[in-house]
Length: 94
Image 1 (cartoon, rainbow, N blue to C red):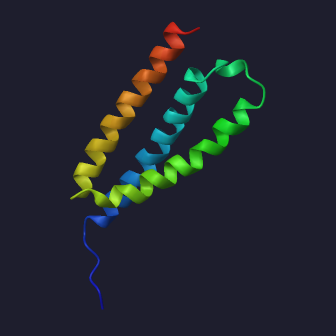
Image 2: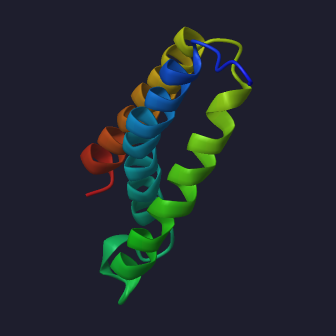
């Protein structure tokens, strides 16, 4: 029987929780920074469908981190950067 490493719970939770919030922020950045911004017809549909592949990619790649703590720290930093960019877009591009 194979042993499950202890840090897989940390990696999985980081990928699921922080990966989802990162996917939301990156989809929002795409909506703000692509041509036409939010006024383009049917862009909301595209942005909605972008969330799943970004989230699943993040969830898949979180197992490449050496520990669960590193996954939480790196994805947390990526979330801070993405939401700072989203805030800056909303503040300066209105």
